[in-house]
Image (cartoon, rainbow, N blue to C red):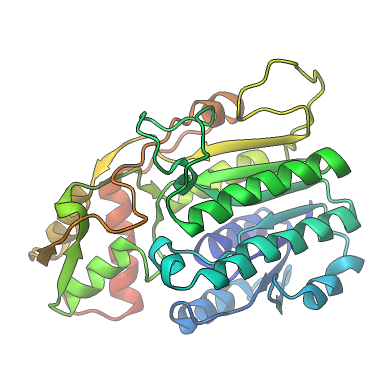
Length: 335
């Protein structure tokens, strides 16, 4: 079994991945800065569950703090999974410096740590937002991703480039995972499913941007975790050093992979699942497209399916119900 470092372990995906790895018998060291971007009590409750397992240890560390991260350089981690990042497209427009600190400087510190401890595999969170102004659907790893429309997206693109540099210079196998709209129990309060549910329960109005014409590749958390687990012990080592390469390939030990359900779901259908569960209509205000937002996301997951037998199986109807069951229990909602 491996000794694994997970950054952002108190976050949504970090929590679920830590839990899955612990159940498989791995040792997990989690770090997180426990910032107040959203309800810190939700993060603490996630940690309480993880800390019931003796193979889990936790340190409150901000990856953008060089000194804090340097404390980990005497550790023996075979695998590092970097899920610590400042999330949110809209927040990046009004708070740009936070994204540079966490997503760029922080990722640099993670790369330096991986170089120092000679890690066997670095997996890190990229995002579907890197596809930016691309209009060809579904989004493929072979598409150009040079036109991001939010600083958040730009920082994720920079992570892929930084990882490539370190893979090439220091022979660190890296895998960047472009996540597509992850949702599920213990999810983030700034995400649509959480916000819409909270509004319905509190009988408040929700804002529907792009006049309801959004569509997203909503991907349930267990499918995401299964995808990460399928690649975590399979670092990419490029042996053939091909001369003709696609944008998702390199002579370095580096790769990027889409990880989504591979299905474009209309936002209004997603909202309808919530209304059906509560048998109640959500009050809606329809607004124009927000700056930095894209109308559609839709993943081509051929590579992950073909090379790692990735097979997302949770439908949106089932996934939304699972989230709502958790929400009702966690917040003690009376239906």
